Length: 220
Image (cartoon, rainbow, N blue to C red; front, side):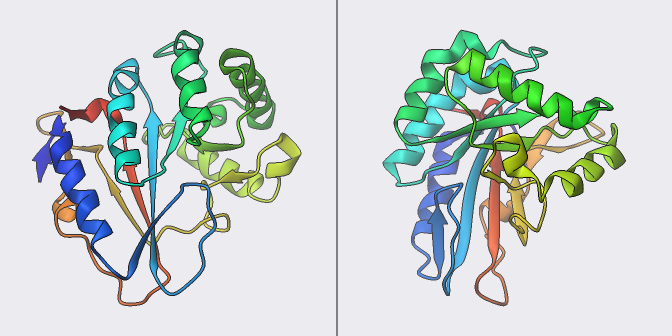
């Protein structure tokens, strides 16, 4: 167990270990992979303004190591104004990074209406349309509604102008998730488990792993 913030050198060493595994493929986030190897997908959820401050460094490191992550941006205005970082997100988008919507639409009773509103707001603020979305989790808050939304939207992505989401197993099933946002309730600190050092190996091939990170928890 390692408390945040975590050195980016640790993240680099983790990726290098993955790249050295002959039966593991590190995939572009919105790719659909088939074959006889385990697929690893990388996603950054931009929850806070501090995440944006560290994002460029993480992306530069990943691209140096041939990793193409997904980056998911909030447009609810609660923690940052996405339009203030329009140039950064447009530059990453132009470099082939998947920049999508990080929605919290399930916090509204009309979650489909809110999803459409957020998609329109994303396009207005960043200057391009989101091709995909992820969902901003808020612990147990409206958890049952959140899962209801996952099921309801899974077969309707194109109705709302999206091509991809990983919010439901029918869209992409993750057999294991490594994340940097576990909460120690005693100290209030976030931490990661040792799986960033010793990647749990699947018994069978053709499994999907998600590496879910928030750049605010990493440091130079």
